[in-house]
Amino acid sequence: MDLFSVKISNLANKPGTTQKFTPKEFFDYFRLHLNFAEKFTPVVDTNLVVNDTALWN
Image 1: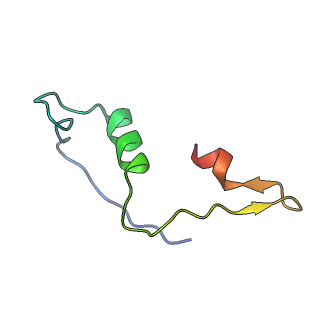
Image 2 (image 1 turned 90 degrees about the vertical axis):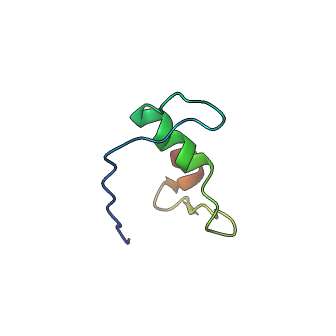
């Protein structure tokens, strides 16, 4: 798995407001609005008991 670390020193404003995101709000917003991939395809493997859809959500 690739890892790309990013240091955020100043959180952005929530869209359409002057209110800053909290770290959790920003993480959730970024995760839910990821648009650089065509489509999220979860890994589901019953042998390994992996279901990325449940983990992602």
